[in-house]
Length: 468
Length: 94
Image (cartoon, rainbow over all chains, first blue to last red; front, side):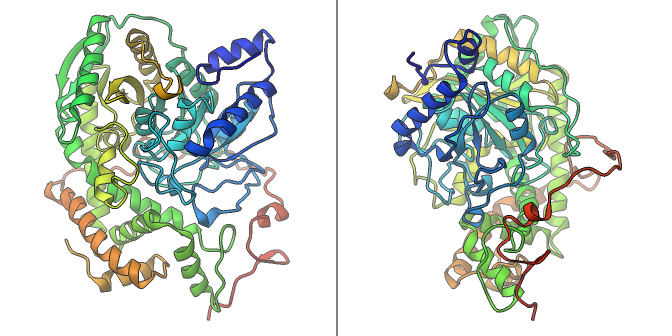
């Protein structure tokens, strides 16, 4: 049978498998065929896995997720040739669920970026318009799902790396509550923020994949017990209270076309029975970005200290140990990791710690408190996921601060450890606009229920127009 | 908040990065601009606010203290640039 990978959802695929109309290996082969056809242009994958292992729905894994026997580089030259000898817990859970790996997807180096342009292996292109970025850091997974090169995939999110690329590529991405998905075996960026999460074509697939990978793991002591995942079904939002934080919906830099699509979705939520009201997060938006760009680089500078040319990864030979370490790191890291290592090392260094890192940790407390106050009156809050639609490749690459602003609206909830779901809510200039739903910790089921009802009412066609 | 060339060199040393001359120059400008932006956090008076180091209120996540299988030596060395016997081999420290 012909498999239309552009349209096939994971749920459709499960149906085909259950009725024995197709085998898992045939599905896997269909995605590899699609990769052969379209990935020269898009560059979603850093490498594919030719051998299908398992009897389930194939999956794409971001290249920060360790896969036993399959090279894992985190988009960095310093890990070129690194072949893990163990699976990350999330990879092991996919394996246990029978999901064959299609391949490892492109990412900004060490997941540091908002466009995938920081990958040492070249950028990924947006399936809606290949002259534009797919977002980042998880642009490879997001673009693969939208381009029919994977039915679903896993990303990782520190300050927006799942939600923002899903917004720019027009699919569904969940950054789960901090602690609900194990990070064991996932290349670390900023450990008090990093989370793994699912990307899919619709909310039900996203919920299904979340149920496969989430849950306590003795190998990651930050994980918690997760409430049973409910696959969303209803179409009504009766009884749901939605808050619209005006700072996140009226921030400078939000494109008018983005605001229009988000407003329309909010209006639709009201028609489906939700109560909609305004709320405030005054300091979360104003100070969130500064807070993040102190805490994340500080933690990154510590996490990336492990790349010293001794146990794994690149080594540049030198006469002494210290020269070897310094040369290895200079040769192996790209510009963005170096920038963040330098910034983080500075912020943690003697004399500056209290003014920068210490102060940022206090701002983090304020951000968590503001969100908690908003959730006293509302079940969830909404905003655009990204202030803009997908931007041109190269447009922001030379200006780190302009690039950092891409995460303005995703960062605050990450600082508070809150779950956030992106669903596509329309087009602006022919490019997808993402709606961000944020709830209290462990409110994933509410996000799924709301996202599912809105998705059905919106009727967004997630297949890029140029590929239909 | 400008950062000087000397500070960039000092921080590079702390971070074990041997930067090229071109990188030192570029990073001096870029880090100054980024530091000016992130210094915004110092506008707030937060003397009475406790810091958040972790978004969950988890305390002492213990595991049972019992032996379990771990990586074999060959697996542990599988990605090492240089091995000598059961040791990672590195150049002399001086």
